[in-house]
Length: 121
Image (cartoon, rainbow, N blue to C red; front, side):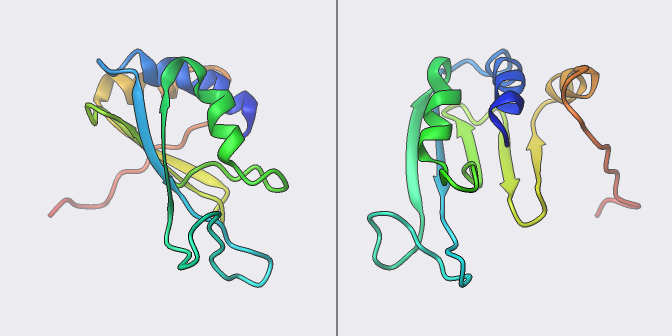
């Protein structure tokens, strides 16, 4: 996600959680497609934790400075929502309450798509 997108999304997410601490995981792929995680020789994942008020700056600080890849998964301590970013697909999925999803859908600066499976099992 870009800085602009994060600046629009984070206040909405913050309004739908009772906590301010956010946790997440991030991994990097180098140009050859190999997993390259700073500080982790096994290339598993880089875990982080931030406070919501400074989250835009903090998220961008752990992102790849060349690609601006934000963390794949991040969520608040109360697990009220989950953001999953997939840089290969150049998109993100947000899971949360109906009220949260509706507010995102109605935001004039956030592009969203509805996805409804044909049937639930």
